[in-house]
Image 1 (cartoon, one colour):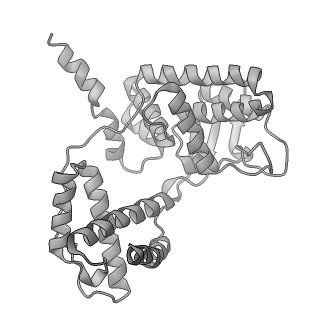
Image 2 (image 1 turned 45 degrees about the vertical axis):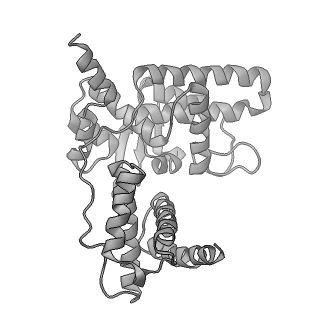
Image 3 (image 1 turned 180 degrees about the vertical axis):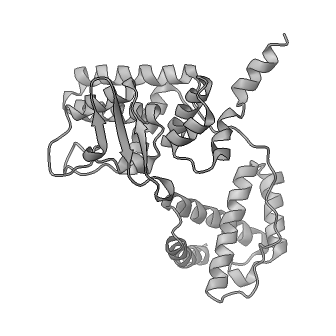
Length: 311
């Protein structure tokens, strides 16, 4: 076990540096490292030896893929992600001259039917909205010193739900990028995915959420829209926002709540209101319309409604 720990520390560190050099997103890097760790333990258990790139064979990969599908009964998306992590691992080994050929090259991913992105249905949105309102009411009564923080958290969540911004786009918001008036507003997203710029109109709910926060936002030299409140005032980080959404999910009885789920919910709401895919794509900053088409893919709830019509 000590040898395994040493391997994980040494090999993971070099692999992580490679991924960062290749400009992989931080979330992807963390996922790939976790996937490699999972594979390393499986490899050691099956072969009674420590994983190293030169010991990895196509047979190992085929066996691991089968293990994920049959023994662990993993979803196709999970299997494919873990295979992608191993492919990145072998590419690192090739780049470093540790191996001369790639054992993953003929390992096929698992075919899967396109599934709808995860979004909140109307009942779940109602539960989230009620939780936010209740949280604000209780914070005034029980935690008056934390009320500003809770107001910020509420505004962030409602703003994401009504704009469909990515987490990075929300964090990057600057005061100069926002235009607000009584009847309309807009946000200039300076550096969206792929370095693209777009203007997102703000509906009444988004404007109210933003104005509620800006009216109590701490005044300092930092021009970030979303700031920390307790302790040193600085721009808000992604982990803080994820923790806020996790807390709301727990209180609202939701299985999961992330910035991406709120983004998907925004898009699904637009599609359900009859907004064309071209407009939805423009609002989300999608370069490819096929990405936006996922929002017309029926989810489990849509299918349940369809079969109930037969009874």
